[in-house]
Length: 340
Image (cartoon, rainbow, N blue to C red):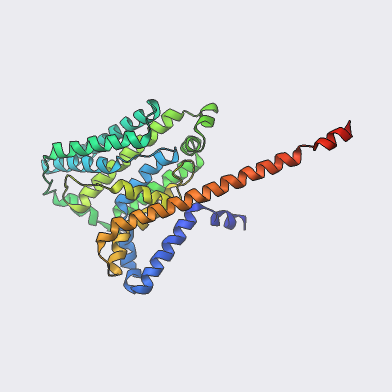
């Protein structure tokens, strides 16, 4: 019974409930949406956003943000795809892509953690620089004619229509979630976001933790860029543009607090499924996919407002409880005089 109550209170359960209600509602208007093939396609379509959401989740856990992940995806996709088109080994292309993501992440982590620059400002600047590098590198042209074997990888399926990409990423998310929840160093991310000063006092390397969070964010964005290339089959200079907004929205929908110190990768993954399914839902409901960004913005603002109100209410309740406890423990002045 205690396990059931504890599970029901998990923020991820609210996200999962929202996902079920959303899909169920769409199914009422168009039963075709609830077919096994359609539902599995929703999972397959969420691969890129799951990676981006889980990557940026590490920075949000620490109370920071990274709005450069969309550009990181684009640069990684452009460079690695060009290497494949030119005949380079896929191993080299993958390693180069991951190094690009790690370097960009390390740069962001250095600026935020060690220079003390606000994360929104610094990563926004990084976004502009990286986006400019994409145009310089590609000279404004598309990267096309990727090897057929590379694009076919995205169609490789296991367990029915579930792609191997999603299966692998799901396994990675589960393993990382266990590490974050069960290991001492894994808990550092949440601890830093919950109380950075307190974390430092108890010996947690706050700056190094934030640096690692940004490196992981960059690496996840790089891997997302590689998978994006395989799924799409071509790269434009604007690849990944605006994806950071959807990744942040996925995290918030998944129960991760933007103030840090609260949430999980499982929640981010559930939020990613919701965000990546918006376009498909619009099609099944007979609307144009042009509303995609508008709905994304509405969802983000709504959930952020609800989260802020909930946290403020919780903080007020906790302060009231602490005040009541202190008042109860403090003898009244008359009682003190009577004792003397």
